[in-house]
Length: 188
Image (tube, rainbow, N blue to C red; front, side, top):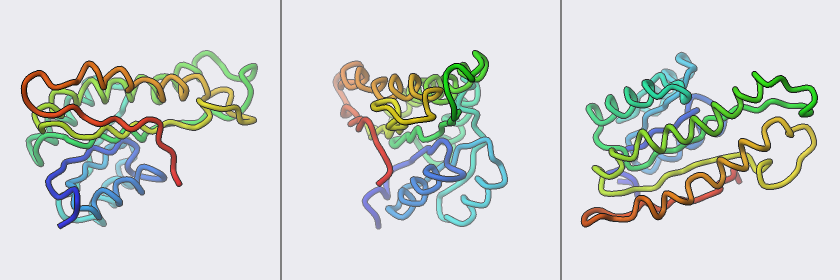
């Protein structure tokens, strides 16, 4: 039995890259893992590879209805969510002058609004689980300057700060425990 054998995780962007590494690490520690992504084939393959109580859930992080469906399906199949991991994100390389307003809005929708919808959507389930840990990953480009990522930087900076107020709004109200919210995270 791993350290997370009683935990249920939803990993956004879980079908590839950093998200799949997070999903694998959580599964290796015994968590039930929902690989949530828009990449159906990769997500289904990873869930099959992980086995156990892992499964794929199609999730567009920018859709409130998608979040509601993902949390409802997860609770029905595995139990309340105690480890929501907001890993999904997109990059748009280049200068701000080259970026269209539509492209900027897409980056903000996926990287910031998607994480916010996830925290909002999973909050009741996290309370039913008796608390847990939110993993909210954003690019370090939001905290420092890198050449070529000016298009992504504003959303990453706000995303890194977004969960901090939740520490206070999610303090216990008579039962359960307040979730620990590590921010920001970066791959090592």
